[in-house]
Image 1 (cartoon, chains in turn orange, cyan, red):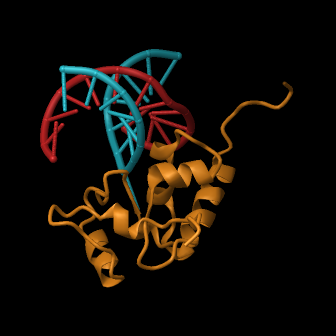
Image 2 (cartoon, rainbow, N blue to C red):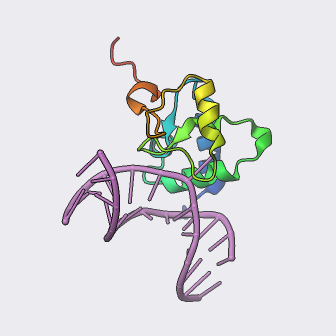
Length: 110
DNA sequence: AAATTGACGGTTA
DNA sequence: GTAACCGCCAATT
């Protein structure tokens, strides 16, 4: 109880950055997945905010995060070029083919 | 302090 | 398959 339930922004941001940093080239994660991995389910919107606020000096591969439909960030058309340069598979409608390029952390027993 | 915004997501029509 | 709708929650205005 004593512990205030106040949202710890610094901690959340740190977790998000830590996770995004680990996404390998040629793979992507979704905002929702990152939020979940960070320990904050339902914080997908805040994940987007964290990445938008991320300072460039952190050198984060923030282009490797897309939404659950495989759509890239609005007002950031460069993102698609960056991903294509890493051989991320796009469908004809400019959406990432998550079936092929989503980063699967749990190896389903290859 | 109150209302709006947003790099989202799941459900329903 | 698409589109609208609603729930989400802190940051920003």
